[in-house]
Length: 107
Image (cartoon, one colour):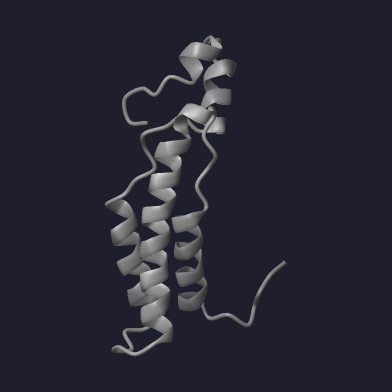
């Protein structure tokens, strides 16, 4: 479904909010704590951004807020656990389940 009535800056801001909270699920329960901590931190940044857009404060415009949020998200990259997609890709490469769900460098 398209939302043509949204301006591009507003659409970009909403996309940034979705990027903040749309984390892939961990492949195993062992990654749940890292996932949940990361999601909570990123959700706080999204909430702060939305609160600033909707409440008092200077009107910086949606493009500025989208950039600001992405800068905060870059401080909290999605690492520390193996996602379902990462595990499936590793399995497709011929790795064992144990190898596929063991976090490697950059995860």
